[in-house]
Length: 329
Length: 162
Image 1: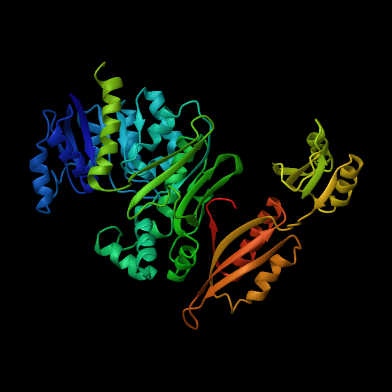
Image 2: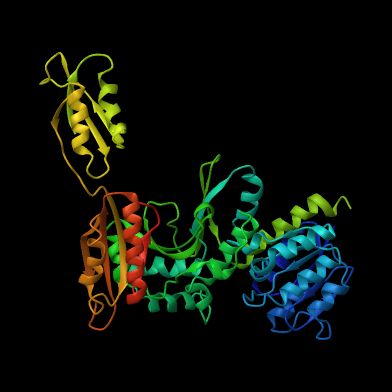
């Protein structure tokens, strides 16, 4: 049985809890925390009771136990960090992850902040402590992109990565193209459906996509870049007329993140794309094309967000560590 | 260009060699027997890129090989790129924007479709640029980016090169 401490009990954390309840997966949760409270139980926490408490709007655990207490005191093999991303400081996730690594515990995270801000430092710490740090869920939710590039495409030189990294923007652009909506109308629709936050800046200004590029550049391509190195243009100024002008030529407009390591290209911007191009996906889907020397071009398409979908990537990482490390120890 | 040459071994190579000698780049060679061609002659069509001002020298070299140039079709602006620009295009002097590219001499705006939804609201335009070489196209797009930055216009570039 793999013991995990689960930090963050919002959409992703609850998705993980439900998957464990339904499928078992050889995982038991011995520590749990949301932003206000925590639970520590070496014999395994009752996840359905915790989900019920959240359902009623109550804290998941005891107000006297903080998330840091869980990191430092709970008995677990893997820390699962799925708290919300803070792009500026990466906290409290950065502290959680460092704390667990220093205790010699593996870490799996969906939190983009720490990986984008200090991947080299965290990876060095993980190596020093002899544990794994895995972050598949930080880029494109359910798509196993990082593992595909690091393992499936090992030995290839990756010459270019380009793709649709933000489902919210893709939804807005899909709707503007299909119905001739203005940006504001499509955004309002995305909000109603829960695809966009009350403050959509992080998505529509291309910050979310840019962070994903930083993570891919640093972790897969061996570059050393930060958010400031990404040339970034969002979709807020796009007009329905511009989409129509693209449509007249059997093209459309999508927010594309692009990395060309050899040419120093690291950018997020709206681009004209032929409608037959594999990156032209509908709705909130994500799509990424990876260009390589041996394997040629590969395109990955899938759900980039969502409770169950992101949980899928986190669980994949937990089971990866379980199969390689936890069982043998 | 369309060439007529003797139907003998080595003639095609003899026709292609001068092209590389003057720094040209062969894009396609179409080689077929036509009913109108005399039995001892061969028609060949060659599509090529040539640096500015080298055509005369190439024709000289071909004549020296005993090859007749039947027809030359010149297309100067080989590369095409279509972009979309959003912003206050008229208020920021559209003809100046176009002129900045045209005055390079090696790239020009060949097509422009504009939609102006309402006075004072931003317009959207699709601009087609043609250029002599790929490098000149990159230069033209750099110029357009700089102009757009200065005039606060949004440029949407194509994902793939033309």
